Structures are given as C-alpha cells and as structure tokens.
Amino acid sequence: MHPNWKTALLVVPMLLGNARAGDPSRSPDLCSLFTTAEIKEFLGASVRAGRMAGPAGTACQWSGTGEGVATYAQVQVIKGTEYWNTPTKAKGYESLSGIGKEAYIVPEGGGWAAGALTDTAVLAAALSGSSASRENTVRLLRALLERAK
Image (cartoon, rainbow, N blue to C red; front, side, top):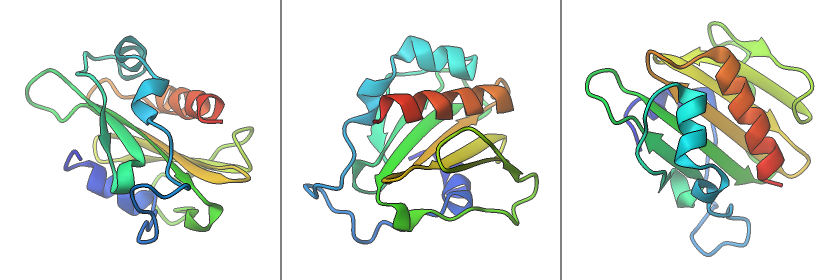
C-alpha cells in the first residue's frame, strides 16, 4: 500500500478486523475492473499494472511510473455497510449527490479521496499526484459503483 494512502484510510475509515481471506464478504478482484489505460486516463499519468492492496485484498492500487511526487490511483470495495463513516469534519469535505445512497469527496494528501455507500457495501476511490483532479476522482468513484455490482 502506498504511504499516502494511510491518510485516505483516515478519511475513509474502514475498520476491517472482521474481514479475512476466504471470507464470503470479501470483494472480487478489483484490479480486473479497470485497465491500466483507463486508470491512466482517470489519473492523467502513466501507471503500472494494478496490484491488490488494502486489508484482506479489498483494494487495488495502480502506482505511477514517474519519479518524485507520489502518483497513484486506488479503489476499494468493502462488503457491509457497517464500515461507512462520513468524514464531515475533514477540511474541504463535500457531499456528492446522485452516487449511491450517500457519497462524498475530500482533498487528501496531494490528491482526492471519495467514498460512496450502497445498500450492501462501502466504496472508495482515490487519486494522488500533480495530475489528480476532483472531477476525475468523482468519475472513478462512479465507474467503480457501476462495475462493482
């Protein structure tokens, strides 16, 4: 997991003490939901192939290929709504409408983190780096919502 993602985990608190490998609540291979070319388009930068990340394989991360600024994209799906926590006190918090039951976006460590609640899961998307944008983070979250059904 990329070091800057620690901040996003604070913004998108998902305590996964009960999620274990082999658990039926575990998410499918999230890396197969997006191609490297699609992630490059969302991030605006070249990335390496996605790698499973997060607790119990609940996330996929695509790391940037350049040097310097930490550039990455990450998506996460956690089965179970009990892990939802809206970071309303985070600086720059913004509620999003029309995405799941609830959704938000916040500026996060050189990029953006967004989350959405559905009837059965918590979804998160983050983009980080000089080319990361609020709009593309929201687009990535919407695409994740569609593909993770």
